[in-house]
Length: 185
Ligand SMILES: [Zn+2]
Image 1 (cartoon, rainbow, N blue to C red):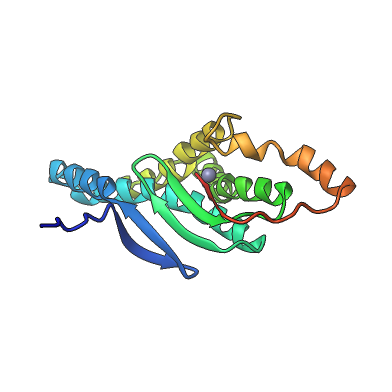
Image 2 (cartoon, rainbow, N blue to C red):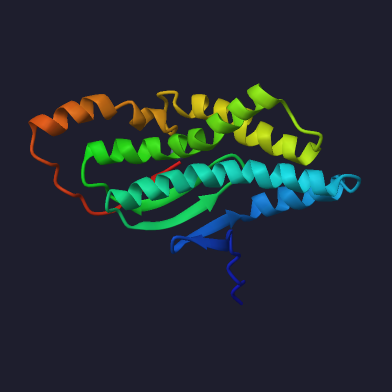
């Protein structure tokens, strides 16, 4: 007898015709946290949502950059601490660097205005709003800094190649497109 194959990834939505999958552990962790936070379930739900919102925002940044660079984007997968965007091989090393920057740039576009807001006006009376401000602002900013460390598999390992790639782009012929898929965390 064959056991039914367990699905490790659950499709949760589509963004710009790209399927977004969530790993089962994300759903399990979410369920456990919500069960443990019966007293303030709405706040726990907001914190969880905002946390995965930051990861999704980051991956959407890669997705938009990849689509703009003419890559086919296959999927976005969300895991407990990171996400993965799968897309076709970029045209050049320069394009690959731009796609690597996409994630942190998307985060920064949201984080910087929020941090300015908090700096100018402070936090609000509403805990849930404050949680969103803190997660999309401060937590997201620290994850940007971490992500830009030049260590694999972090984005920084590819992103900082932008300057040499820029220089190379102007001096050599465009690179040949190689077949196959790439993924960016
Ligand atoms: Zn990334």
